[in-house]
Length: 119
Image (tube, rainbow, N blue to C red):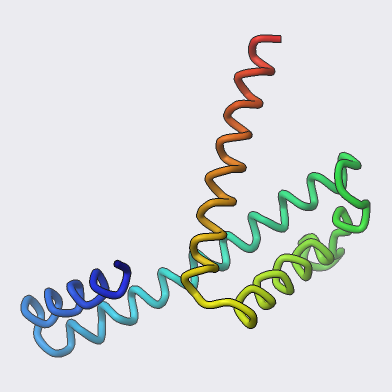
């Protein structure tokens, strides 16, 4: 599981680098995790923006902030959805839901590309 892997990395770092290695690796894992979460939320909001611009989703998802050039409503929607999942579920259900959803949409995109290629 994720907890045992984290503990294994912590033990390895303390054996190789010493006591400071445990802290260094813990900070590196935290930064990596936060960076991945930020990239995933920005990518998800861009998907919603594209859907809104092509009128597949409501047009409000296509609204872009003039100063920062980010999809305002789509980003807020993604953040609210993630917050609701975190408040009313546990981390493991969030990970499972996100992993399954990501796999499902990636598979559907690949299938769509195959279908478009054949037609």
